Amino acid sequence: MRRRLIVLLALVAAVVAGVASASAITAQVDPDTAVSPPNIQPDGTGARVPVTATDPDGRPAFAIRVYRSKSGLICPEAGRTAGGRFGQLDPAGEVEATEVAATGVCQDLSKEPAGYVVNHYPARGKLPARAVVFGVTTDAVTGVTLTTAGVQRPVRFAGNTYISVVREDALAGASLDVTLADGTTKSYALQPSVAPLIAPAPEETTTG
Image 1: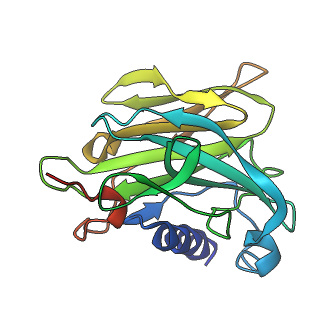
Image 2: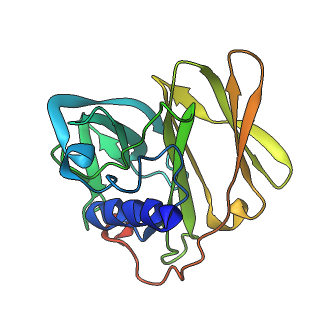
């Protein structure tokens, strides 16, 4: 039951953000209160965009926006950024700004040092299916790495948030590794989406 509710929260956030699907959330809230308004509604103090990742296809960079919910949870969401705007790509490939709303995947970091989310984007035209791995951490985390095909590489990490953009098929057998201040490491297994990535998300629309 807990797992189903956790995945449900990811899917709700994904639909609002125009993402094909999302999965694999940890450090979540109690399943009995996970979808209550105080746990997902912004507390009105604004949001921050502490980290970005270059789009390998040359379009506006991916970014993480983080707000705090009314119940005190930390809520990251993935989007695009350009010219000081945060949002999703419009049909012309420009960033359409979105207001801070209940679209983050809110996480309780009192139970885990880090939470993670994987947004899955379908292939479109010559662009392969891709995944955006992102999340938030406590101050106990000093670094984040992603291991794909046996190769470990650092993930962009700043302001207790991190983000990485990879091909969807690279998630097979992949792991997200979080290094703590005491030198220990926590690993989270990743995997490609089990749902067919059929319908292109509006965010992935290209022109020309």
